[in-house]
Length: 97
Image (cartoon, rainbow, N blue to C red):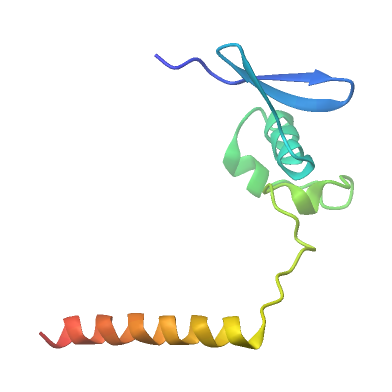
């Protein structure tokens, strides 16, 4: 039976400990862990969190940075378009058979 993760704090940093091994979380993942702790581990309650105006961590509660956006080059965008088109074509061919 796998032991549950144990959350610990050292000098303000957050760590997870399992079976004697310690892993440090990045700041955004630490915020997610804090939010889970705040709502007694209920993932659905993190999603439904009503502390929009009172908690400065609210935008980060899902463990991602909502202000970080990826910028793709035109070459990468074209590559993604071709891949998506090939996936659609293969799906359409399966539907016809």
